[in-house]
Amino acid sequence: MKISVHIERTNTTQKIDFSGITVRQLLCQLDLNLETVLVARNNEVLTEEETLQENDLLEILSVISGG
Amino acid sequence: MLFRGDKMNCHKCDAKAVISLQHGSLCKSHFLSYFEEKVFRTINKFQLIERKDKLCIATSGGKDSLTVLYLTKKYLEKYNCNNELFALAVDEGIAKYREKTLRDLHHFCREQNIRLETVSFNEELGKNLDVAYPFINKGTKKKPCHICGVWRRYLLNKQARDLGATKVVTGHNLDDEAQAIVMNLFKANTKIAGRLGPISGIEEQELFVQRVKPLYFCLEKEVRLYTILKGWQVQFAECPYSHTGYRHDIQEMLNEFEQKYKGTKQGIINSFLAMLPLLREEERKQPEEIKPCQECGEAANQEVCNACKMKAIIQSC
Image (cartoon, rainbow over all chains, first blue to last red; front, side):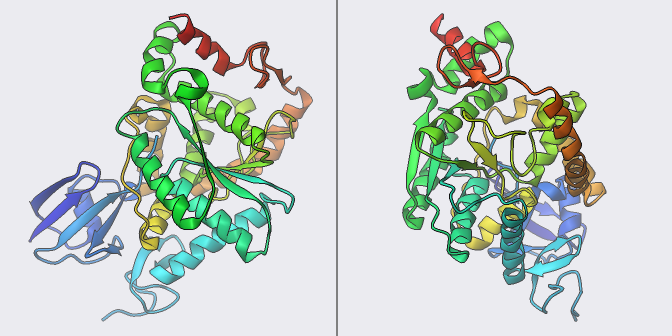
């Protein structure tokens, strides 16, 4: 499925071909550590087991900030 | 169809979950209660705040300091405490970083009706970090995080004491503490490790204002989630120097472990707290002599404190 991902840390948006089903699988595909990000869709935070849909627009929020 | 206890549903109700924790998933409402109760329980269990205390909240405008500022105020209201409270921010002078978080902090303090005091490296020490770092590094090889840490702790303690505070409340979270424990363990700094914990320091010292950490048991991820769910405008801001430090490598290692073995960071904290009384007992047998710095009069374990030594390097350039 095709989904759009906005990454807060780099302030970039990319369209990707996602071959999995869940948030956990997406983060794995993007090579992002589960402990370092939160994922939101329509301003709602999703758990790692949430199922993603075709054409989802996701926000990947960084947990780590500061120094 | 989803059922109670399903991973996507709150284990306390049928609402949609926002986080999966070790003991189950929680919805927005139950997470907010769980988080706040955890912070209040930490304050009570370790007696971080006493009725006579005047509280200085060390703030930067980032997620941790806004959370600790808000929840300390909420705690005082909940328990009908009349403690005086103010926020103190240190502006290190790091371009394209600190100005963003300080803007958020000013806005937040105005909204929450909290008095905000600010102090800067430039005004107090003669140079901001961006300017001072290359000079100090040239002669000492000290990294920016080390220089920043020495000066921040120095100014926070000095300003808090000058403003009459009896406690400095910091936003250190479970991740910060687990990193500090492992860093000290790897470097065999047992003396320094003994000063960690929810209340910093081994003995009360006249020149030191005690530092307390209400977010001690809160994962960094939980703190960020709390700020999102509260709807606070916390911009993503990362210190440009953060990748240069030893802490960064430890942080990455612990996150790798946590992803693979859930509960690693909590395990580090629990083990450390079990050992802390022994570390402190050992330190009390040979206590470090603290005396006023010959240059500035602040607390030092040598004739001249580290902050003044670094200040002298810049002045000689």
